[in-house]
Length: 250
Ligand code: UDP
Ligand code: MN
Image (cartoon, rainbow, N blue to C red):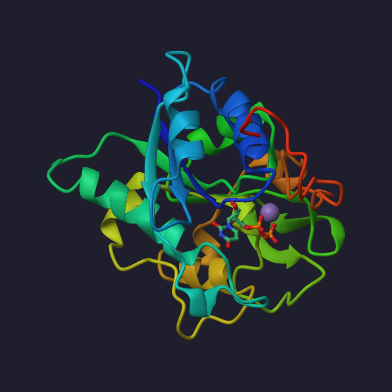
């Protein structure tokens, strides 16, 4: 049996949300044994996302729909996003395996809703024993960032931003085995003491070392995931009166 891949996706309400989730579902349903943990940044499960999840057919992907709101004081530019949502996903996974003596092999990764994922990426991360890493395209003010690999080991980071971080890697650039998540129950994303852009590094510091990292994607020479960002939609011509006669969810 293939190890399960748990994909934790934080998501929040905005005009492009349903389009992003649709793209993501179209990718994920092509991946065997993938369990999608969709965590809404919201005080309730919204109707839009609930309907979307209900509409995921037997073709998948299997989806668990969670929600937790970001406290308003943390909704500010320059502060890390989706901390509480990623932690809710981690807590769900840990809770689920609480009473399982020997957990089935599994892999967890953090899949933001606006990135672009190749199917090959999932083949690569599936064999993660502890923590695996790979390049990320279109990130950090560069065409790509990547772990630098020598003799099969990570020895540094090709990045345009704070290469002195212990793990100078984007959220989309690593996966962690279920085993490591369960054996390090205190590993969560921190608000306090975590500087912007240090979330990934602070998290990985709690569960692994650079020497231990498993390079994927041909010794980190291939880009299989892209940190794409969707343009803010222009709604300048939305009517204030003479509204449409039907109410349509977009
Ligand atoms: N996100 C969220 N709440 C927010 C802002 C973002 O849950 O207030 C989610 C978003 O849907 C995405 C992830 O957090 O899955 C990262 O956000 P974003 O893509 O805006 O970050 P960036 O691309 O700038 O790293
Ligand atoms: Mn993004």
